[in-house]
Length: 340
Image 1 (cartoon, rainbow, N blue to C red):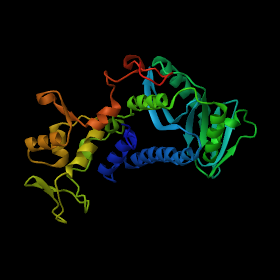
Image 2 (cartoon, rainbow, N blue to C red):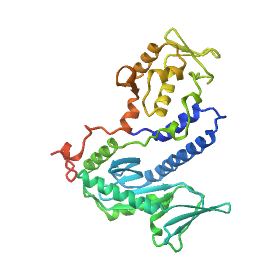
Image 3 (cartoon, rainbow, N blue to C red):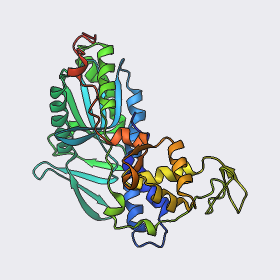
């Protein structure tokens, strides 16, 4: 199951919530978080226009990240019964110029000129990776179109001399593009086969995660300690008689620790040790800490001093699973849409 928001965005959000504002890396963390948040907002923006397309049996997958030789990510993959589309989403604002010779995008905003990678080269490379991935897993190839979509209404596209201007869109054009492609390409696979492909891709989605504390040279000792109250947000709640109690507003909770444990998992590469959790939650008992981790559903790895715990939801989307289904091992035929 793909998470609602990217693991990388969750990592930056967790770090932002635990890092004191006075820390020298705080401004950098805010900038990284806002960039990640803007990227997701742009992808979400396109969802409205995708839903407007009057095309039956159309399947849309957002933020699909697959691994084949190397990892590659598609902002939106549209699976039709006779065609497919990859959309590279851009949230840029200002005046946007495309240079066909240098293959560079230039933005001018408030008199400041800035250069970016050509999004059409990006989406074409994603298509090459996806085609190779489909070949490796015996999934039929269909005509696949690639577009760069600018979702910010304040973007002004300057495409007068750009030869591939038809592949650069505003989000409002997306429904008509999909409807025209559906008329051009009648169904060649069944609805059931298309659903099988969608399920297979989503099951093999792998999230990007980083060693975020190491990347920004932040120590665990730099972070806020103690459990924040879910009501008044003050630290720290106290563990009394199998539950948490806030000394300030008297709020009581049995599961207030679960959110902090999840943040610890995000920041520790999903390797939560008893010592780390005990320190971050400011608990007096190592054994009580262990019980809280286990009851929260974390999976234990290793023994004795080498033991650590992983959150299953993070584990499911960041690690390769040797037993996952492939079209070859699952004996499914994409052409017919029926099991063989």
